[in-house]
Length: 399
Image (cartoon, rainbow, N blue to C red; front, side, top):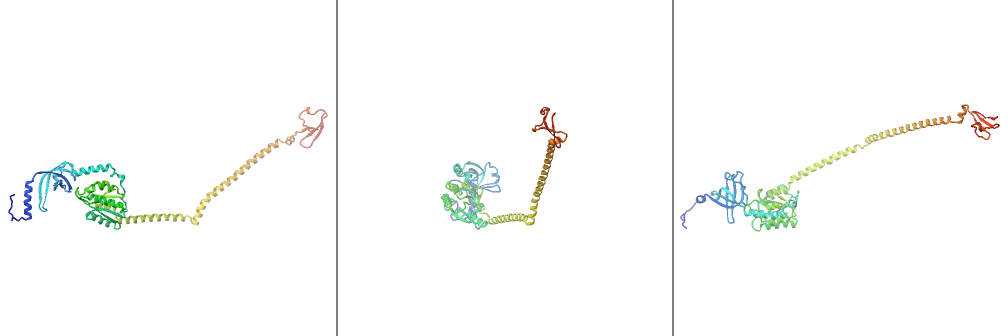
């Protein structure tokens, strides 16, 4: 190969970079590239930043807002796309990238397809069912963390835990969080925490990364370990836009490891403030009940008791007096009525008395043997008679 420059040529970094830029940008000014989206990062300005990769290499890519607005789909990690654009060199960093003018879907990415199939399989087994979810303890005394011992995620969790409640113990269960063997170590740490009942709640996760970096948390062995944990598990993988199958199996999903720490570690100041509020409310309730009891007891002193007794007794006495008077009046009326009946009976009897009849001028006539004479036939001639007028007796003989 013919050398373009003499061996003793000395370049500055800027000169060499400019030369490389001219060669790359001049040679690859309008190319079509096919690859899989990874580490997709949309910017608030509307620009799209991500990585295009295949099995052997990767390249940074950017699609500016004006071109991105023409897309008829939302790019996602793992999506296989076909892009048309130009190679550009960013001299300050010495990086090269492709600036995309046009992008279309080339087919589902292998990673997303595998994850979707795995998700469907595990869901059919019921590992994601809501009835399996356990409540997260409101006041955890010990929090277990399954993550990298050197990662930023652990530092964030420890800082937030210490700030929110220094009285909460933290158990670190170190594990690989990316690469070969990571899924097995994560699952083993979850099993260890359960075997020795090491904590009240588990945070399983890591900081952000590409789709490939987060793959261990979507491995079947990790999902099954989380689903089988009797300790409640909070999945905290990556950033808010990142998802892993561990999020579906966990009892709660946190958007970030920091958010997971805030979810499982209550602020000590909030606890103390809540206790103070409960204390005040309890004191007010007790004080109110005591005051009401005092008022009730006060109504039972000697003076009030006599007044209350009189107020109860007087109506009863009035009723008793009324009943007594009604009884007397009733008896008097009954006696009066009985007396009148007796007087009437006596009068009737007196009117029917033989003496009364005799006093009216009548006399009773008997024969000597005492037989009353009612007819002339009862006394023949010569019969001696005894005549009884109103007073005295007269004796006679029938002629």
